[in-house]
Amino acid sequence: MIETLEFFITGATLGLIAGITPGPLLTMVISETMKYNRKEGMKIALAPLFSDLPIVALSLLILAKMSDFGIVLGMISLAGAVFLLYMAYETINIKPAEISTENSSIHSFRKGILANILSPHAYLFWMLVGAPITLKALKLNLLAAVLFVLGFYIFITGSKMLMAIISEKTKNIFSNTAYMYLMRFLGIVLIVFAIILIKDGFVFIGVI
Image (tube, rainbow, N blue to C red; front, side):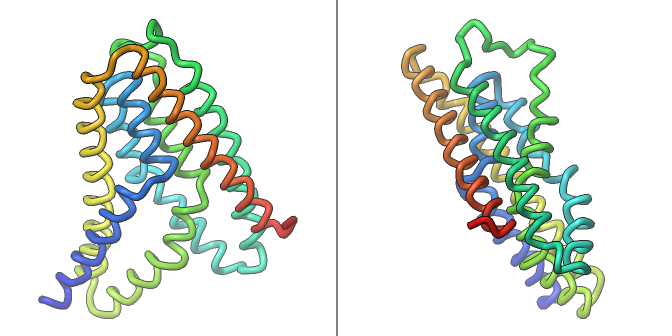
């Protein structure tokens, strides 16, 4: 039983690290919370729960056809870069008048799913780390594998939701000017991540 619980601890640790490590999704959790409210940030945080199933399936397919590995990840990276550039443009150009908790066209959840699907990091995690550990757990018993996956997703979403709560509380101490500078900074961070994805995409494809 202790060996089985170790897989939950492993999943929880990996999920916590992934949840608080700076990246596009965490940046979007903070920016959507700062633009609107923590509810919108939490929608971004929940995205992996709904987007990772096709990612896991595609990761397995890529592993089965390893020759296509670089090209597929390269195209995903480039598409993700375009999406992040769009999000950066939205964030940098936000106006105080546009900030509203009643805006019905925010679509934060959809943005979070797109950001997760169009980032190669989730694919790389499942191909290189998640799948091997899950298969190892399955050799022990089914419960161990389930606990690993549960631990990972409870902590990756929980830590990002906590960041949304912290961001909302922090938001109240900013003046309008400081707030606008913060949003522009977050937009620049998204541009940096987009540039990294473009570079990764060209590396995967073999251009550089």
